[in-house]
Amino acid sequence: MSLNWITPADRLRSLPPYVFARLDELKANARAQGVDLIDLGMGNPDGATPAPIVEAACSALQDAKNHGYPPFEGTASFRKAITDWYRRRYGVNLDPDGEALPLLGSKEGLTHLALAYINPGDVVLVPSPSYPPHFRGPLIAGGEIYPLILKAEQDWLIDLAAIPDRIAERAKILYFNYPSNPTTATAPREFFEEVVAFARHYQILLVHDQAYAELAFDGYQPTSLLEIPGAKEIGVEFHTLSKTYNMAGWRVGFVVGNRHVIQGLRTLKTNLDYGIFAALQTAAETALQLPDKYLVEVQDRYRTRRDFLLKGLGELGWSIPTPKATMYLWIPCPPGTGSTDFALSILQKTGVVVTPGNAFGAGGEGYVRISLIADCDRLGEALDRFRQSNIRFDLPTIAI
Image (cartoon, rainbow, N blue to C red; front, side, top):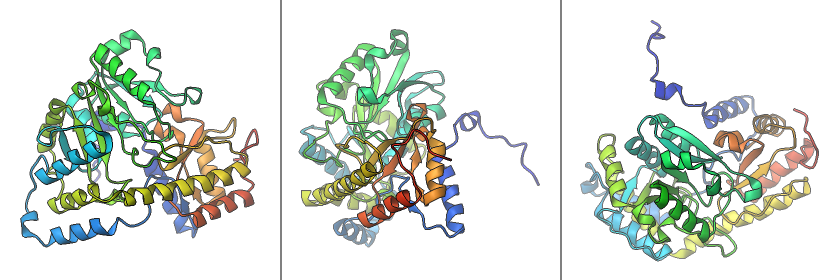
């Protein structure tokens, strides 16, 4: 019996197609045809989770006290591990009993924050391009997205002065993300000071996504929003263990900052989930307490891949600034070629998967994102395929 008379809610139908889901379909079709795919599309870290984390999880699994429902606000020991880690990393003092909340990954928290704080018609400022949950969460909540188009000539930084007063006065939330996915851009401390002053003036809630702050290279140290005086009064910051500790599938993240905003998110979550399995929280505590050598190993891995791929792509005609952080390269398409067409052309001709920039919003058109999620041998194979397929990037156009 057909159920075509049951229609999705408007909030679902209003969402644009999720490009990553479409990419999964194309990848499945290619694999079914026997193509040896080199998947550099998603930000899915390769390699194993560090052994001490796995060992802590295995031990915690044997403890029956972890088998029941965890506290809604997370275990006290994990919250303290979060705030201790913030104090070590950024010199920021936080109260574990109100200013830190564990999440089922930062994506979950970012989206649920929108549901907790955005009413239909509320104006939400979102950079374009940006990580999709920054605009999809507000869309699900019925918010009115005002895109802040980022530009290469401005180093992909938000131009606060370009936001009209009439929009800023209506805006309720500003989502932003530095180091940035997908652009790899980093923001100086002065920018964070400016954005805090802007938000305080217009009474806007700041939501900063800091998923890539630990994947920084060449001596660069990203700024935490919460380092800025007054930021905690008007903002929260999201983090994840997915990238830094190779724990993407474990689904562990957290949010820190303004206790009233965090309490609102907690209230919503008590109606939607029971939090993170307590054994995983024990493992996450272990991750946050690992010696710095583990972090250095991760940074060295991505820096080596970054340098290897930049050199190879440079020989193919691409001129790409060297990112100071993240696990990506943000690369311009040949002139006159759209990002979707370019990504599909690369997939069809070489079996290499990259992500079209328009997956991250209209401001990402004309770019593709490459993830550094394969070792140099595999990246070298991707470069060889580019050469053999005559995919070069110093030409005005590319045949599709």
